Image (tube, rainbow, N blue to C red; front, top):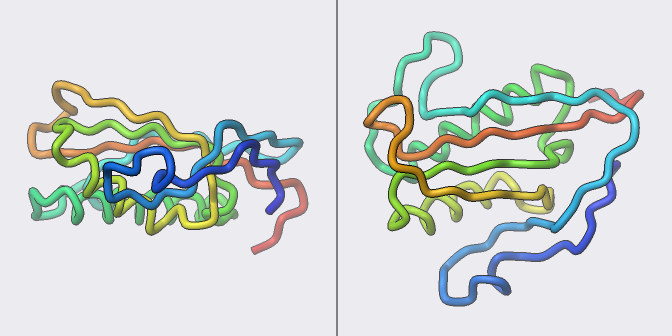
Length: 142
């Protein structure tokens, strides 16, 4: 991995009362490279901006994380270059399902993460929105 991840941890240890398995860290140090600032990703298609036809937090999170992965790859990087995510959810009862799903995409990545429970997102059917930042190292070639 090209970035320095400080104080790596897994949410199994920090939230033992919840069924979570996310590889995160307290800080990420980058040097050089190309920074990719991602707009908050919602459960909609990147090409036509149509919402997916689901009100399930797991399915919505899969779409959000697929969008994040696709955008990082389109920028010339890979998920290992993701350094930060900010997760917005509208119902704390969906937290475990959303974070379990997100964790599938973050296994071994260890970004820093902030999670917020908000009253609403831009569309009432959205349960989750995640924005991220990636840093693609100088000279990286996929």
